[in-house]
Image (cartoon, rainbow, N blue to C red; front, side):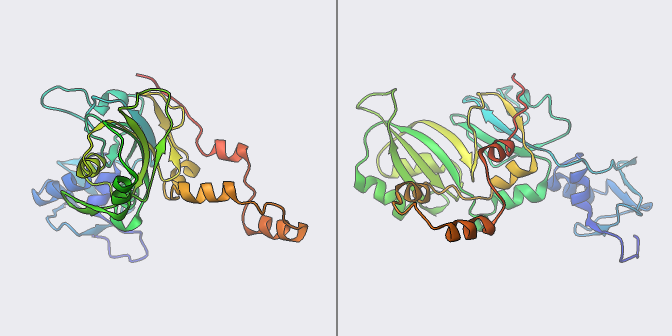
Length: 295
């Protein structure tokens, strides 16, 4: 391997993953199985670091391609589609909606077969890990239709926390929604969580005695699905990607809307403007400039 410490050195499995050849986990298997050589020597050490600029890397005898540019896309996943690239039973998968993506991407987290809504996909492993790591507490916002009408005490239990398969979880926010559709037998709710465990929302409502009839993820952080149609794909720019890490906090928004002391002195107004960059509705729209591709 290159001994020049001034070179930017990366883990071999990450370099393979960034090239679009395989996931990082698959890259580990390739290394363990002796499919990778560095400067003519077969390597088996998973944590090895290499210099992309100076080390000659072959995978199964073929030169490793240069890392792809980072790709970030948002898909409005329809119900009845698997969050996977292929299925042995030939069921519909998200791969059917990714034909226009110029490179290999993978889903960040999952939405189950019966759920729909915002699904992030990328080729950036570091970004995916940051979004899904529990310590990041990235908020996920859902619209939920349940088969009944939970009481205030039922909802309070979800805010306090309930135990499901995988551990104890709690809603960060929950509110009843007014919807034109439905009847007195069904209620709609907006719920915000951070954990993102398997079938978490469904299990949470089951714990208070209700089945989820419809589940749609409408936001990750402050990145919202908006008017993106089912099956539609949107490429995200850097500003839109950063919105993923801004918490969706409906209670704070309500507090601001109901705040009566709106009049401030000119001096205070100037101080407020000096805190950060000017934000306009035009800038907000630019944060997510859709380039949709329909199936």
